[in-house]
Length: 504
Image 1 (cartoon, one colour):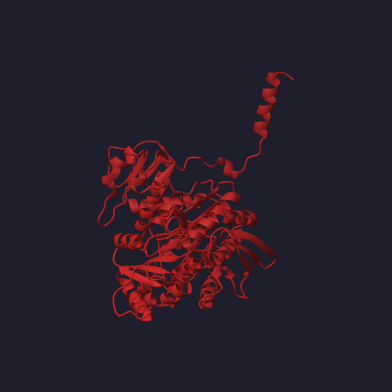
Image 2 (cartoon, one colour):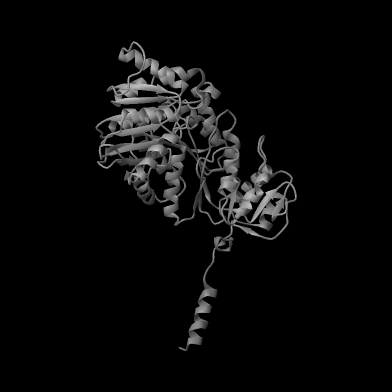
């Protein structure tokens, strides 16, 4: 056969290659025509965008910049910076001297773009909410589905889980996605339902319930009702995945069944549909988990340490199965996951005596349930000494003093050698500890089992320097994000890097 004949045969084979609907979908995230169609706006130029961004500081080459207007800030002011960073066009509410799509309201346009992204894709959508663990569980489900689909999964990044973050995350979902994983959060009643209606998930997962934001909700029952609002947006035939180990499980199940959802529960309870059978701690951290999936048993390893991650993994497996994902791929993903910044990242830092200490970064968020869980994990961590730097837990309202005082028990159970308490709300815990230690007044630094109370991250850094970090120490840094304890982590990890140490 001649070269020409080979070429003709190859061309004929390509022409005969079967195609599916997904093959006809565009590779670019958005074209100017698609944005016009979605928003009803008018494009000044023809263009294609590879991303969507609303913060000029995060713009990358090829992005569409959405000039949102808030009460105190107008994104139109940052158009020069966005285009200098590589934006190809912007969505604006006024004519500008840059490629743009002109709309009446940029916030509404972002919502329209999100709706169009949802409707044009056949992706199975998973929505996640809960008082604790939303972001970590979202990342685990994404890792599992992305592995199984060979990169065709999409997720909300960071904690983009509010009325702006959710539509932004949806607008970034490529048409070719097979799965989309979206986090939904709230501070007040009535915030989850609109987010669920926007995403219209096929699978909706509640991680757990805890008194986070109880200041605004008023009771645990109200928190359960607000979290259950995620089920209101479920697509027809959708699945509600519910924690089985809370006293409000029945309430959540009732909400799900009212809208006709399929219900799957997970946890340690004997009645759970996805039930923990066994969890064996691993020498290098994490656990070997055996779970009953109802019709089969599943054994897998999770890299993340802590009792809370054992139960989280059951919810992950339930969600992956409900979404039609690969459980084997999910097991591999859980075995490879590392801690997220501010949510369990672990660092080895050089110490003054030439050794290394473990620093656990949980500085992004804190509530009574997550505080207890991470202190329990600290107590299970092999260490010469255990140090806890704990920041105030915010949005607890009239319950704040009681919940802070109650941390004395998990601190004692974890055998913490020294605690540094940061923030005004931590005064209640300081008072409780002072009474238990029989102190007449003042705090003692360096006393085994002692503590110190201060007002800022800078003071916490100074107190930890005074106490001193030795090789073999384990240090937990945890507090609500507004306390700013990320500065403590940055200080000691950057100092360690300057000394030639390396983060895990």
